[in-house]
Each structure stands twice: as structure tokens, then as C-alpha cells.
Length: 283
Image: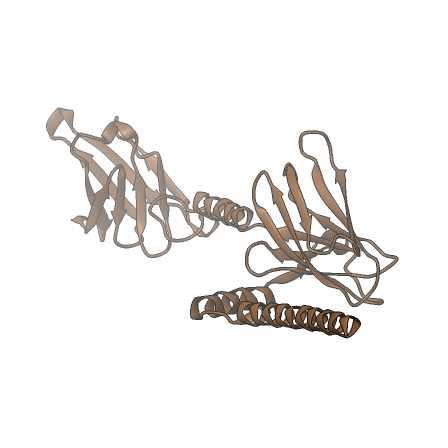
């Protein structure tokens, strides 16, 4: 009787232990199920992140076969292959602070550098252990943070990859615009090589024009800065042996005549103090 009672007690303890184990497993499954349930904000957030990760951005070919991504537009996906290396080149002068990889067991990332001291570029050499892998990599630098997806394929890979930076693109556009503006003569609406500067100027005056040109529709008479603060001369156009006043306007030190002139006279003052400049268009 004692042995039987002991056996029953032992059986009861084992049953209770099994029940506890089952209950614990059930609680773990329940916690997992709850963790997989996303709120509306979480669903919205993951949807936005997925869209950024999977969107098709600008990808172009750079020098030496480099695959170039526009930084920040989408998450770049770098495809690598076992027994090959992927070279991810960062901006010259950029200092790498940290490199974090989701799968550190099957992905190997090693740093390398190129260029002269003071303007060196950091290269991240990426090697997967096998094909069919997908992970993420975050690279923090002195200038920005890179969020990169890494994929491994059995044969296809990107030997070289790099980035084009929006601020560099904007700087180049500003430089181009500055060069274009520099080629536009003040007041005219066409480049300098399309203007007619074939005018002669005779006479003496403190305000003698420094430059005269025409775009085919209007004539531009540029005066020296000494004209500022004093009355501008009056313009007469010589036509049919007569001097006629024509429409013009003064903008700063620029006189803009509303049509293309052939022969004109600029007059300032009266009597002995009168100053006169004659303008002729050379054929």
C-alpha cells in the first residue's frame, strides 16, 4: 500500500509538471501571436518602410563599371555572389564610424581605402558565404548614414557599387547655371555669341558708353559707373537726315532702346558745356 501511494504521488507530480510545461508553451505561443499583431500605426510604418526598400530608384553606370545609386532615394540592394567580392565605394573624405550587418555569420565585410591622404575613399568589401541570403547593413559615417540591403546570388553580382549625392548634383547644376549666366551679357536675353557688338563710338564725354550691342530686336548702351547719380544723356536716332527722340529706358547704368539702331546721337547739357557722342552701326 505504501509503494502504491508513493507511485500515485509520483504520478501526480509528473502530471502536474507536464501540465506546467504545456501551459508554459502555450503562454509562449500566445506571447508570440500577440507580438505578431501590429497596430494601425505599426502597419502604416512597415508599409512605408517596405515601399522605400522595394521602390525602383535611379541606377546608372559610372566609370570603370561602377553601379551608381542616388543616395537617399531608395534603399539600394547590392547583389553579391560566393567566391566573389563586392566593392561598395563611399564618398572621398568620408570617415566611417560603424558598420552593422544583420547576419554577421554568413556575411563578411572588410574595409579598404583608395586615394591620396586627405582625400581617401573608404571601400567596403562584401563577401557572402553562400547564395540565397538576404540581410541588411547600416553604415554610419562622418557625413551620413547608409541603409543597404545585401543579397547573394549563385552567379550574378555587382563588382563595384557607389553613390551619387544630391548635394553634389545641386552644386554641379549651380556651377552650370553660373557659367550660363556669365555668358549672358547684362540686359540681353541671349548668349554673348549671339549679340552684335559691331558699333563705333565717336566723341568725348565723361559718360562715354563702355559697350554697345544689339540682340536684333533691342539695342543696349552700357555707361560707366560715373553716370550713377547724374542725369542720363538724351538719345536721338538719326533717320532721313533728322534727329528723332525714340523710346528707351534707363536701368542702372544701362540704356535699353526698344529697337535695333543704325545711327544715333547721345547729348547731355547745353551750350558750351554740351557733350555729344555719336553711335554708328558698322556694316
